[in-house]
Length: 131
Image 1 (cartoon, rainbow, N blue to C red):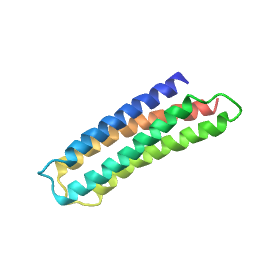
Image 2 (image 1 turned 45 degrees about the horizontal axis):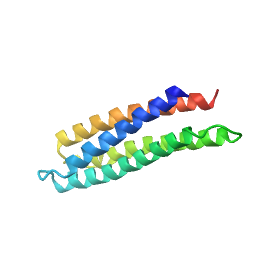
Image 3 (image 1 turned 30 degrees about the vertical axis):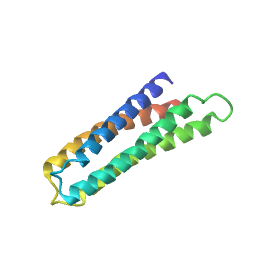
Image 4 (image 1 turned 180 degrees about the vertical axis):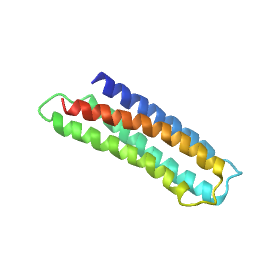
């Protein structure tokens, strides 16, 4: 339980940090229209990821009782959705080959890092629900 909570907390911190970094990048004046649009979409996806991870952490605090499996199902659904949102962030960059390669690589590094954290949190949560 502690490991799952810790993993969710680390994932949430990573998602918040990534959201802030991408939001800051999206305000740079040197961006082209395609990069600016993709970054704005990415920020929205990451904000959704943060919301889902926050809901998961709240639900983890209330697991006691006869509806444990239902609550764990909610947690896994939200963590899975957070992971999907993180992956979706990259879609806007993969669809356009004319985008700045440095911007793509930077975003990819951010997203891969936070997605790994979220994936670990999902694995630990899943393991918890099967015990």
